[in-house]
Length: 251
Image (cartoon, rainbow, N blue to C red; front, side):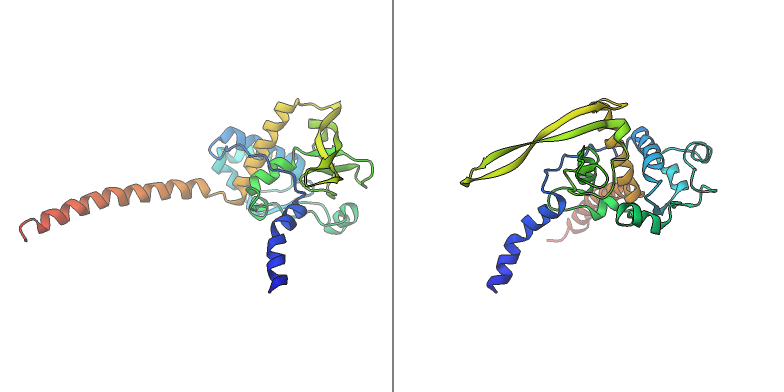
């Protein structure tokens, strides 16, 4: 029993260790911003779909974010022949595993799978996409604060540029004899095509699209829920007054 209680006490720290322990930034809410979702879809197709599939998502579901079949065919349909096809990937899983050490996961519901007590899956992805840094000690040459020792290289480095992470050794407030290797910020080594504000917005757009992809019908579900609640609210008023009228002559 004591061992079980000790394990339960350690669970929060184990979860943080699995995710790197880096605090998550709040992802901007853009679920109703069709322009942002369309920009995110473009980033996903151009940068993510080369290695990651989204087999639970069909291209024609992009109509839900305001795109026509013609726009999908002209701008986003690179890895399929029909708009009704799923977002599959051409890379051979064996090659992917040999190059990256593991097969790149399907991203259909990645925002749901990454939800935790530390934040939503959207928060995690928004932080992850913005915390890559150059690390020559790694096989890919890159590392990530949200996912330490990540196997995926920084495919968006041309947009963000090249950065290194700065650390300082600080005294442990609980034990003065110990020092803590603490992250204090990034240093820009090479500029990218975007400045930091533009890159953050681009990653917000990509995160919003990944969130949409995990549940394309979410906005419709929320709207329907609001309509149902409003109906029950109005119905309750009518039922209350009808009940009062029915019993008014009975004492």
